Every structure is written in C-alpha cells, then in structure tokens.
Length: 245
Image (cartoon, rainbow, N blue to C red):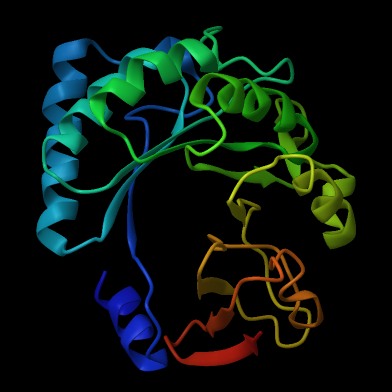
C-alpha cells in the first residue's frame, strides 16, 4: 500500500488505489468456497485490514460464486468505501459456479456496489457476460473488465491464446463496451533486461495489474480520452516512468 501511495504522490495526478479482495480458496474452484460463517469471518478481517491500510476502493475480484461475492460485498459496502465486484466466468458466460451474472447483479446492486465486472477469463470470452450485465444494469451503470491472454490447462498448466498479441487483445476489448479496461495477464520478464516487470497505470479510465507487455507496446488499451502513466518497478524497488500519454 505504501509503495502504491508513493507512486501516486510522485507523479502528482489524481489516482485511486484499489484493495483486492479475492476468493478465500482457489478462484477457479467454486466447489471449494467455504461456509457462509467462514466467509464472513475471514473476508471481514481482510476488508478491515485494507480499509485501515488506506485503500481508496475495495475491489472484490475473481469471484466464482454469488454466495461469497454477496457476503464480501455486504461487508465491504457497510464500511462506506466504494466497492467494485467482479466475477470469473466460463466460456459460456456463466459464473464458474454455474450461476448467471444477471442474477448476481440483481443481488449486488441493491447493496450499493459502485461497479460490476468480469475478469481473469480468456479475453475472447468476456463479451457475453458483460453484455448480460449491461442489459440488467442499464446504460449508465459502471462496468469494467480485465481478461487473461490465455487459460489454465490441467495438462500443460497455461495455454496462451491470440490475445497475447496487443492488437488481438484490443480487438476483443473493443467488444466489451465498458468504461474501465485492464489486463490480468500473468507476469513476465522484460525483453530488454530480464527483470520481472510490475506495471502500474494511473489514469482516468485505465488500470492494469501485473501485465505481460514490453516497453514498445505500452498504452495499447488507452482510450483517446484518457491520460496514463506507466511505471516499471524492478526487483530492487526502483521505479522508472516508461510511458506517458
């Protein structure tokens, strides 16, 4: 948290730091979701720690069931902090638990969440659940998305799709019709120096978690109306401004 706040202060632009609230168990295993009581106890502790750390918003992400998402969202919204909720879906557009994102939206919006989204699925599969969310949430409710460049495979571990190419990723992202874009790709090393790359983007509508990009590709998802800064954090903690648009 301190590192994120220092980066925001260093570049002097308005930016928000999101505190991640992930599933208690494997995000791709909805069958492992703990009991309601366990979810309440552990997620409450996580959320309180993030609030005390000074995050600007609570990002309940990669949720694989309505049950845990609703429990976490209820705990988050009662803090008064802005709360975003995002689901991981299968290739048919359903939450991994088999539930509909439209049903999830109907349960979450009355709690006062500020945005809904889909993340950590292959980029080419996100349009369908996002379309369902848009239909139920209306044209003005904030939606966000950040997809993977591939998918997990039991035999090979990880298989890249064509979304590994920035132009292909952008092609898919243009079908999402959301206001906030990102990339949830697995971290990699820089082609130039072999240093693990942590990429943070500060701007109006775009933010990235650890992202598989090279310096020459930075900014490929930036909407024309946005401004962004890209910072590389090397293994020694040194921050270098890589891009400014």
